[in-house]
Image 1 (cartoon, rainbow, N blue to C red):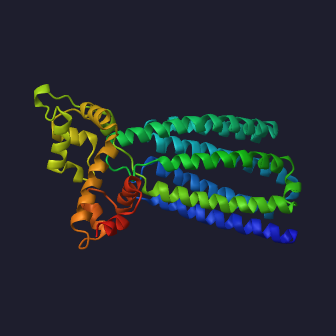
Image 2: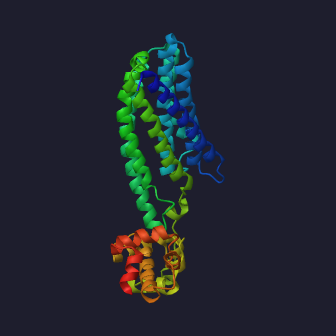
Image 3: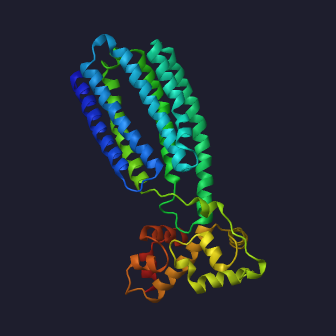
Length: 359
C-alpha cells in the first residue's frame, strides 16, 4: 500500500469504530431496568466513540503546528478511558458497594494529569501518567482477580443457577486489557514523542488501524456479556436466619438429601441456599456446612448433581418421546446450554450420546 492508502485505512477504521461504539453505548443507556455498571459502560462507549472521531478530526483539520499538543491531549483522554474501565470493573464485580461519587476516585488521577498538561503544556505530566497507569493497572489486576474468585465462590455457595450471575468472563477481559496496556503504552510513547513522524510511518498507521478493529471486537464481547449480566441479591449472601433447634428437620445427612429429592426442591431452577434452608426449617449456615462437610461440594454443584440424576432417569426411562430441551427444564435447569455443560462435565459425553447409549 502507498502511504495515502494507510492513511485512509486509519481514517476508515477509526470512523467505523466510533460508529459501532456509539451504537453499543446508546443501547446500554436506553436499556430498561439497567444496572449501574451497564450505565457506566454505556457512557464509556460513547466517550470512546468521540475519541475515535477526534483522532480523525485532528488528522484532517488540525494545523501542523498544533498537532503534537492536541495529540498528547487526546492520548491523555485515552488514558482517562482506562480509569473508566477500572470504574466499570469495580462496579460489575462489587455492584452497588460504593456510592457513585466514590467510584469517581478511579478517574481522579487521570483527570489530574490531563489538567496539569493543559495548564502547563509540559509533556512530563504525560510521561508521569504512563508510569502511573502501568503501576495502577498491575495492582488493580491482582485485586480484581482475587475479588472475582471470591465472588464466584459466594455465588456457587448460594445459588443453584448462576448462568446470568457468572462473572468469570470479567477475568478474561482483565487479562486481555492487561496485555493490551502493556503493548499500547510503549506505542503511545512513540506516538506522543513525535506525532508528525508517527503518522508518516506505514507501520504505525497499520498498527493503529489494527488497534481500532481490535477495540471493536473487545467492545462487542463486553457489550454482549454486560447487557445480559444480572446481579445477585445481597441479602441472599449476607443475611442469615435463626431457627430453634427443635424446628430443624433432617439433622442426619441422609434425611436432608431425601427430603430435598422427595419434595422436589431441586427442580425449582431459581432455588437458593436461603430459600431451601427456609423450606427445610434451618438456617442457611447450617445447611451450607452440611453440604460442604457431607458432600464436599458447594450449593450449586450439590443441587445440579440432583438435577443431573433426574435427567439421567428421564433419558433412561423415556428416551424417545421427549426432546433434550424439555429434559433440561423437567430436571430443574433453566436452559439447555447449562444442562449440557453440566452433563458433559459429569459424563464426558453429551446428553444425546448418552441417550443413544441407553437404547
